[in-house]
Length: 107
Length: 120
Image 1 (cartoon, rainbow over the protein chains, first blue to last red):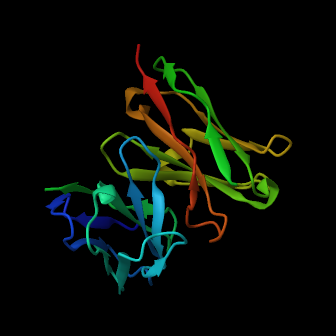
Image 2: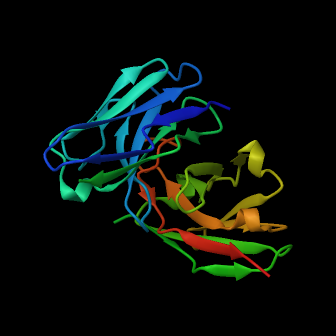
């Protein structure tokens, strides 16, 4: 199975700041990477696919980048509604696997 | 609009089985792939497997073979997951999810999740 190592585990930032979350795959996943946002008690919501494509309806302050084994999610101009956990998911190979998650809080 | 409505929370005894449902609407169920996921609260997400509603063909994460069985009822646009020989390690929230726009590997619509608690 492809292992997804996500960092940091938690993150605290101020409103308006920019934050970055990293995900490293155990092998090349050829941009087969998605990012999800999960608010407490809710189901995950797709943000980014193909490493850098924004899902319909997702605010443009979210962006993804990376290639090979290294990927990142950037959130510009942090807003209060961005408080959530974020997960990466590789879909290059079966079984689909997720990172361990990053819990984002507002300072 | 697309909706995935999961059945309610379950409290089951160790060794028992449970059948979870995911009733769908708003898209063409019979040509879709439904995936199921496990999430222990506060932890990451695991992909259990998927089923193609068109012919009932399945693919499982090796970790969940023998634990989960996926089925569908196309007449009611409902997907099911049977979990067998339950232990406390199976206590988790289980989600169903589909891709309407991205094929079978990305998940843009999710059920609300169902908490399964295994306890004597």
